[in-house]
Length: 305
Image (cartoon, rainbow, N blue to C red; front, side, top):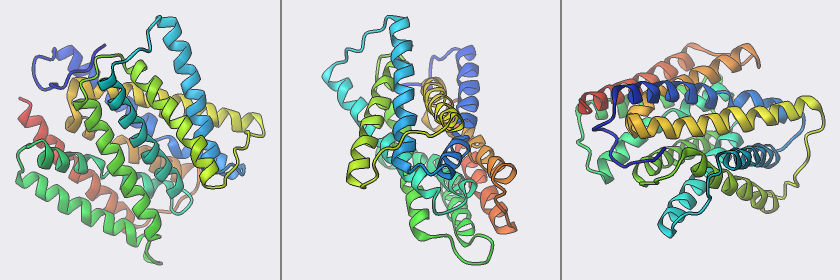
């Protein structure tokens, strides 16, 4: 499996279909982040510990996969630079998102995170000269209004500004991650890419734990280890590997619409497992943000044909 910078042309139809399916599954997997994170927070684990064990276990699993595939970990200097960039971006995106879970409902945080496809489209337009259209401008307006509705929550008061900023930083980092995956011209398997990304993430969480004064703590029981394993396999390995495959065959922007299942998954988990309340303004905010993404990606789909 190789990544190429040009994903719009000369891609067989069966590969596009597989790319779409990969993007759907990746979105659902990534949307289960709150399930593991909130359960581990309830057990007393801090953000640095949750993410360190998540990424560390995921990296160990990827190592075994690489051994079974007999795949070399050698990379060129240019590839190493891209992989380093991917690792740093995913560290920032994951850390800020998980920190926001302490400040607001996970479903709301995951919905605000879904502004990343619009950010992707804007970055592609500004820096990669993709044509600006009325669809992009309208999607920006819808997403801004949607985030504003979420910010004011259920009418009892606005969401913590710190939490909102953390999620927006997470969204921007994730947008840049997807673009770099697509534009980085990495001619290697998604397993090899994530071998490096997950290593950087585990190392980054270890360093952060010292800087933040949060000593790493082991999961205390079987249930905690189960949720660590869940975070390592489902929203880390599966989501990352499948997202790379989707970005390769359907493109950075088109992959975004598949991510609509991320906030929906997180919202359902919040409502049915963690009893998170949702008001009319929150529902409207979710609808507007998802509408913004659907609009921007439908536009991208037209340009691919």
